[in-house]
Length: 115
Ligand SMILES: [Zn+2]
Image (tube, rainbow, N blue to C red; front, side, top):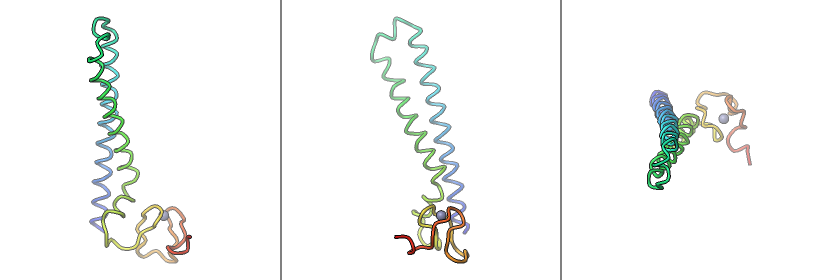
């Protein structure tokens, strides 16, 4: 389905964006910290460490969010967009037109068979 595929691509792009942001932010925080510690006069001040610390924290959140959006995109789309047809309960694979009901993606048994 077109809408599903578009949402999937957009989510993956968003995930990629967050991952890049996270990695770039972490690198810049490390570089900034290294510069701070190289300058002995400044690293004794606790307030100067607050910036790289908060930046590092945000980078981690951004990276995790990115990983979730990127790798969980299919499941997110399946859960968020309703009325897109049948999909696998385990991995969110689009099950429309799949004979037997067993998921070809992850091998999950037909819906209802699993207790
Ligand atoms: Zn599946």
